[in-house]
Length: 341
Image (cartoon, rainbow, N blue to C red; front, side, top):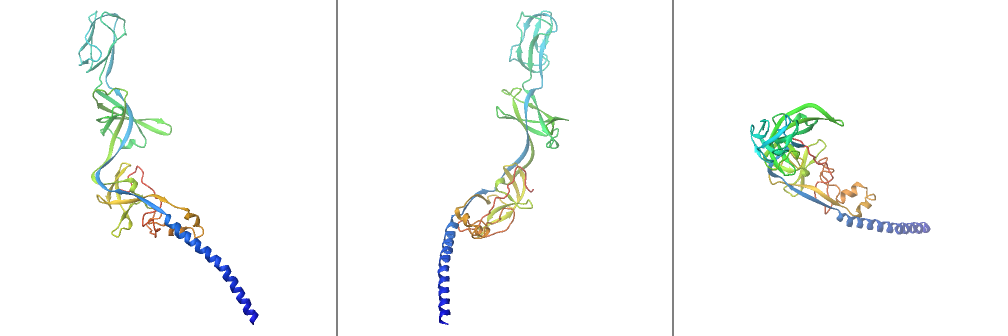
């Protein structure tokens, strides 16, 4: 009996000797875990809802061209007797341009400006020789291509703005005509629309322009940067706001007109409300220990489990000591579309 007791004592001491290192290792790992979890940091961007106006539009590229221009030529051989104009002169319809020795007088067929004079008084000319060219530089047109995806939103009579790219000048116009017989580029069909525009000095044919056709517009409404929105699995828009206790909470909103940068908030936010979006998450080597502590459970304890999860749901979990209660994950962001109106 005494030897049996001694054997049990030896086994107990051996177990204690084996247990002590294990406890020390576990304690060290727990200490490292507790220290490293404090290095999980999440920062947030703040966006404010404001009152403003917002609109979206279709935009097309084109080039200006002349509506009226004419190059006058000699109808028969002869001599130029009298020149009545010089390059740059403004003329009215019916004004005399030059007179030939035969008595034939060449007159302007429309209001415009003398662009070139190709002869001088006393010059001999043959039939078909160029004499004078005039052009109307005040009234031009622009033809622009509309692809098959947008043609249903373009119609004759729509107001538009023609912006001269090089001069950064804008002129009001409207869609005057649409050619519905398509041309193709690759696998996409294109249609040609035309707008006429009244311009002033400095604007010349051939200059590149942008034609903008307004679509939707909302005036004096609550607007928000589209980057501040997230969407759940049902594509419902929501934001993160602080409640009365200072905790971030998920707030669903309804949206309206969007221009791809700002979006109208029709319900859920008021002017001056602040919303929060995760900007950056910084982790230390704590993640290396996650496998030892159960993966996801370790990350949640260290701050990985945040309200909203992947911004696709509305679940809430506790966060790390330095992370605070905040929306987590990297949920989807709205693009140029209008969201859920």
